[in-house]
Length: 211
Image 1 (cartoon, rainbow, N blue to C red):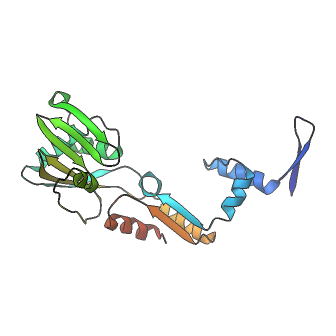
Image 2: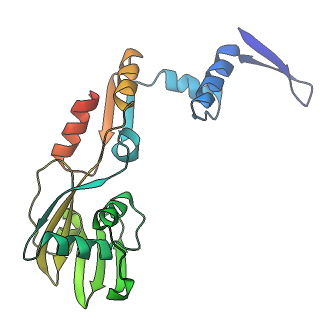
Image 3: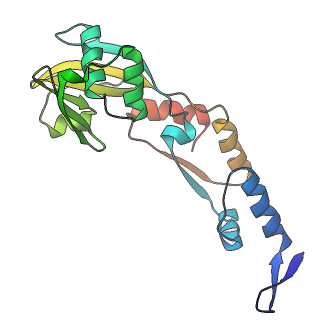
């Protein structure tokens, strides 16, 4: 079925009604299609690639575990919360929420962020490094490898390892159903991209039935 419509210049354009219906249905679900040709291309897609955090998972983190070295858990959490004081990243927010107190910014002289790695801050006159394992490697700092499920935030103070905090995210309630619907639509591969460790990636992949 085709819909024939008049254009401003007096020309006639025919558009398959199925495309109009598809674009309209997608828009009701919050999906904006640029044109019918993209809808047609999408119908032939055999592989879908998803980002993990905030797409397949809720992107709302909470502190699951605190493992200090050479200080108390409270001291490690306090240092980390101060170092992440100016960040709005979901992981930083979860650390601040776990701390549960007002951050004394007078104790923080400066904070430098390294995108995709972590932050370096001067807190109480000490150089504090907070970030992932790649950040520790980049700075030449020793750290304890973490194989547990979750995102590990490592901390080093004045060049010495101070421990890590384990952060966990939750899978979205409708994510598994979305993957199953794609499989029923004959999509052959569903792929997830993540910067988390292998154990975390495997747990989410198994829960959602990713290929």
